[in-house]
Image (tube, rainbow, N blue to C red; front, side, top):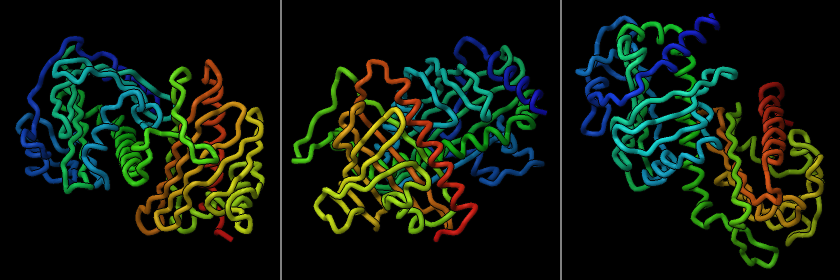
Length: 375
């Protein structure tokens, strides 16, 4: 079965037509229009219902999310192509000139191993409203693939995000059979990751400060342009409430159980409260050495922690943000954003080490809430 999926993916994604084919886009009034109104949001596997462009509802994937952030914030993230590798697990690389008829080249992750490069063409691009791309499959004879993303302003600080992945033609049934589950999971992950990042940026107001770092006296330092700003974004779904997770992000004895060898160094404004805002935690890690991090925000109402590095051999202007978002009754979305200036000319090893060290720790944290109750 895996071999069949791989062959189908290679055929359907690699043998696209090489010249732009501008196909009519549904929903000219910036909603999902004809398909959803005619066929409904819920997919019926047996129904032959289709929109006026010939796409059947049973061959379409539809996901939506209400994002608690302005439409401008969501659109900025969607069109900041350099950042895709830091937050988008489904589509870690995307290139486009944003022009109708222009090429859209991206890497898509079909599972943990299969990553293929796809080249389509922009069909619709309206700022802060929609972005669609698509192309014929197998030399224009066997089908058609189309991906659209819509943004709809609900109010000043709330946005409705909608996305569809649609197929039609002779290959549609085969793609639906072999790739639908993988594509659905990927689109779901992308939707959740976009929601988390947009809400993080808006709620924390982190990027409105131009990502400045401040020293112990409160003097802010701009990031070094020569080294360039580095960014790591990690998101995880945890099977518990934000109230349960929050202490595990700043209490030293809890952090040690999932992230490694942290030590308390009480030199801050409240020496009787070593975990409070303004105090310092010391990290001792392989290759990284000693790093001191000072808490600047510990907000147990918004579930937000921010820290800045005040001592490190290998990183400067390092700021970290941790936020928790409630997702249902016993689910928490955890987003961790780290930005820094590297002292290395080539930061690949440093990024690889930090990224993998943190991923390993987050896996332990996730498993902790699955396997054992909190004590």
